[in-house]
Image (cartoon, rainbow, N blue to C red; front, side):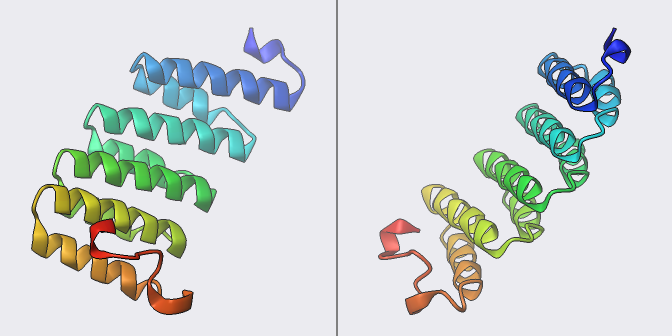
Length: 157
């Protein structure tokens, strides 16, 4: 049925929707096959981002990271990696969360993810780890005016 759709964009949109429905049903192999058939890069990347997020929700960390790393657009990949880092922090997988966050290429998005991790660590009273996360955030802020990188007080960590 889908193969009868002639226009590439229309076909890719249908494949993205179908792929995301399969992801929602946790039919991973079928979803991966459908998503791989999407020719338009941004639509494929968005479907992969959705799949990575759903895999993270089911605590399939390695698989989620592999799917997210297949995303070609750096901004979409960075957002997906931040979400994976947040999901890992929620279940106190601190080392894995830090490792995932460290792979975010865009400095501003990595800094935001480190802020989130610092907050999660502080909430869990993991003070030394929280301090290290904040220090990494500040080190990444080098050229931000005032050097505060958006932190106005210690309570914002």
